[in-house]
Image (tube, rainbow, N blue to C red; front, top):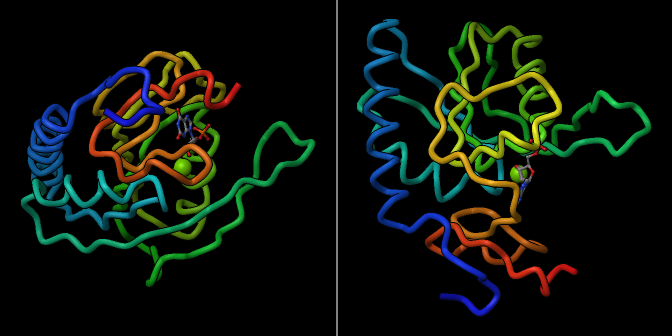
Length: 179
Ligand code: XMP
Ligand code: MG
């Protein structure tokens, strides 16, 4: 275990097992809809989760990435700035957004709204983690790996100060590191 980690919350084995489960569910749900999702990872946190979960989606998907940042303004409803947009038009596409964690829900709500405004047919969300206690806007991911308590976590894509994204598990960051 890394020295900045208080405890491991979700092990690598558990994550891989969950990706297989989520991938199978996504496959059967989209097959039932007779649709193939355009799978979009939100940079950078989704990268390890994206890499694992797509191996378990048995459909002829395409993948893409988007990078967004939220405006820090006085408005309570956040706007987002797109730092890296998708490679193609979303017109008529069924998009499956891949996220590392849903926290307040602001980012997802804005990304979803933006994609729908640009003509996407449908936007669903798969998130590795969910912190339901922190939600301030009304949004839920259709597919969630693990609901976790309100603790700062790192690893498997999640960072503290841009580090620790490469840890192969989800760990709670020691308080002394950020306090
Ligand atoms: P929302 O808009 O749902 O933001 O508030 C989700 C984003 O917040 C970040 N986040 C975390 N990052 N450990 C992290 O490394 C955490 O415990 C954590 N909680 C929220 C993350 O960037 C996510 O995409
Ligand atoms: Mg993020």
